[in-house]
Image (cartoon, rainbow, N blue to C red; front, side, top):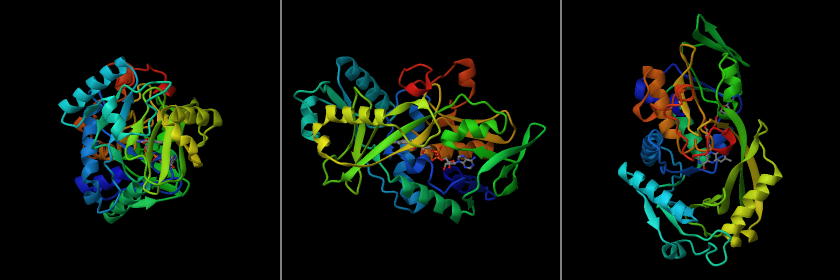
Length: 374
Ligand SMILES: Cc1cc2nc3c(=O)[nH]c(=O)nc-3n(C[C@H](O)[C@H](O)[C@H](O)COP(=O)(O)OP(=O)(O)OC[C@H]3O[C@@H](n4cnc5c(N)ncnc54)[C@H](O)[C@@H]3O)c2cc1C
């Protein structure tokens, strides 16, 4: 939707249809924990997410829609000298490309986040890296804002319409087969997140993507207590409080490949333990709901926005669990590629060839090529 709105707005291309197998917003866009940030370290990623955050800052006026963008600040906590050094390096990289970053001592953190366990913690807190311009945005509102903007610019939004095949003639795309019939097109763009491998397979393309489940959780509504987004540096746990008052939190992938769109109990226990280790007060909150989404995990944890081996067929995937914050910039770069056949400069490294050559892999977390570790 985001790229279709931009194809119409930035490139004057109006003969566009979005085909969605369920309802708009039923994918990961409606399942994420809504965190928006630009605190990436590596060249290739950092300029892309920096561009994205700037676009977020103007998104509501662009769409003329309240997406409840809340720049409440995101704090990454560190728990060792080594981790603090790494955060200082990251903060310097963020500042040197023009974004904001601020290191916090434990004394400062005690004032800002008084509810953390500072005294008898299993993993003592050494400090934190704050990005004030980071925060959250209401995910459904983002989906609906883009849908309305696309619709107003003449894009057809067709729901309950699953793509079941591609028509390819002499290496060139000529259209798609769907559950609602055939549609002819000289350009087709795939953006199907956890279903990327299956859909690309319909065109005979094998992607370096594995699909894994990521869960999230929300508690009953509480009075305001957590004013920022906070992430634990020693376990995979991050949390914010929604405008309705629920504590929204999540952690690691479930750890096995699946298309189930729901998670399992062991990971739930693991996330809750991490939460309790960091902020024991959370133990009093009652969890209302949990859910899962199918993540398109790439081998280096960074995305792909590229042409494919079929002329006129494009792909946008590999967002792992970070594609929400990418929404405006990913749409921008994808629309640019589809309309002009050239890569937009912030996304020029998001190509397949990095997995063939090994050049310009962007393994932000330094975890190697195992998909479920990114
Ligand atoms: C629990 C969870 C927490 C997350 N938290 C964050 C976060 O805090 N911050 C962040 O930046 N990111 C987060 N993410 C990741 C983010 O939500 C995704 O990366 C992003 O939404 C992907 O967007 P997309 O448009 O590529 O995919 P989606 O929003 O999943 O859209 C893909 C759509 O394609 C449709 N589709 C699939 N197959 C077909 C077919 N054959 N024909 C037609 N349509 C098809 C699907 O129905 C779906 O609606 C999280 C994800 C999850 C699950």
